[in-house]
Image (cartoon, rainbow, N blue to C red; front, side, top):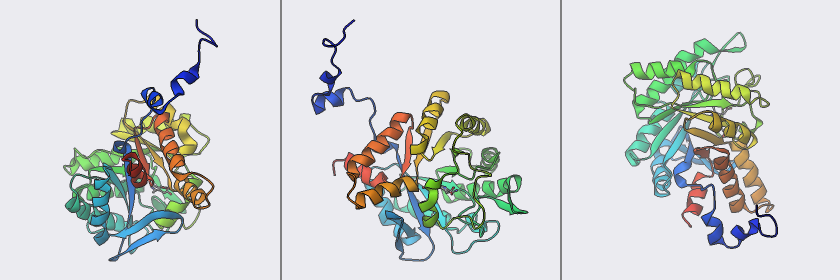
Length: 326
Ligand code: PBG
């Protein structure tokens, strides 16, 4: 058995060519999904103060944006809607002319090859900002299922390629699958936000999507951050109910959950590199405290190395440019 000084691990690190020969993890633009916030009105491209470089777009501004995304080789976007009106049951979320429904059509017209994924959740559309129907001050699981199914079908009808429920109600994948099949959308896959934690890292997103809960928090439906075995039960339940792909969210503080999910299930696994993770990097970069490019590529590579096949990230456009040597 060779040991030092015959064995020298540094031999394979001497040059970039040598390092690239033995590199174990490679980030690719094919792995990336870019989130888009769609708002009401016209001629609007409004930067989100807590997320520099990320904008809310009105529908008429989407074609230019998705052409750029397509040019960069990013395969998919995920849509979030910011409606003009909100109500108790989030009805603007499943209206045929809702923000996301209009956006899907505009995007498909501009760039038919780009995959359009939709976030299926009530929180952007309810006046109280919760992800389900509120009854006696609590989020009612079973009453919410029907509305989520309705929203998923309306997204599919508008042309969505994939629907992604993020509400964390029990049984939502089953109701959505059933409703899609009954509606003739048996070929539309479900990417379920299966292990979604009640995380402080969603803060900037709630500014972007104007979806902060007006009372209480989401801890009665999103997962408790210390739990990993429970995440496996969530993923298992969603797979049994018919999920085609599963997600762990957030990514960075949950790399162990990603690894465990990868080792346990043979399904495509996504990880969401969420808003707070993005904003922290941007803020530190603006202060000149970190090397932005190296930090972003290291973070995205770590998510892939932990076992994610797919990464939803606000860095997608920037990373795609760097990967292409731009
Ligand atoms: C909707 C939803 C949220 C995110 C994705 N879908 C917010 C939340 O659950 O409060 C967070 C995404 C991010 O922080 O980037 N339920």
